[in-house]
Image (cartoon, rainbow, N blue to C red; front, side, top):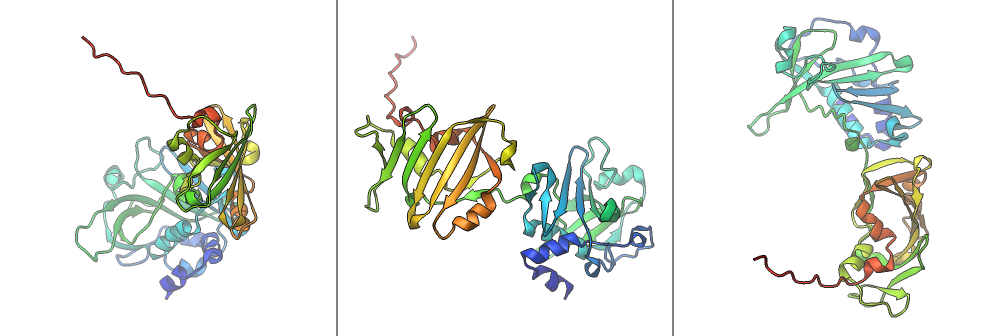
Length: 341
């Protein structure tokens, strides 16, 4: 029933689960453990007051902080983490069961990946759950997974309590990742290109550029201002139309932390009356955008995610969001080169 209860927790309840991973100090003391017991006996009902989670490797440290009713990444400006990712890790920790004692020789721990995580070159990962005043709540060194080839066989992984030399083979799925990219939802938006009806580009230092789509189902974006433009590159026009298709970010930070050069703005008018304004900027060799949605049924939800944040995109997206007219012109055929003799 504990598993069923944990898995049925909603997003808000996930915060409580993540925020409440508590063991008393007595629970951290070295104790006799027999095969078949949980790595942390009675953990689920003690889920109460955790305020910080650390995932430490020899070359990286990930920190999650509880902020009100959410868990965030402080090194990404307190950007929210994915609730389902947090739930997966915490459920896995509460259900992890020690099934077989392995070596207690510290010189052999690296073979299982449960040696000192701070040692250069170590592959071990230290998971720490901390409460008020950063008091340890639960700590576990997580090592190599053991691959099973048979079907319907539970996953196993090598683990060790940091204060103990004894390593264990544990049964259960415990996903512990130190890469912050795996903890955030990197999706920004996904608007199919046929939803883009009109685009108004006001790039600094450039004349206004307007693209529009006809009413036919097969009509594509065309330049309407300036009128009668030179022949245009269909591929470049399609890139503008597909600006928001499966749009994901490379990095994220508070919008006030971007110290780049503003490029202007582009307003994308979509079906159902919604419009999205994009403000791109260049910071050294990186491209950052800010977004705001207006009108339409999804605008409020989108702004709840976008407001206050700047997203890094691939630099090639600059021509999709704020193109110059010359970047949309049909490319001249490259002159043929005479074969070398």
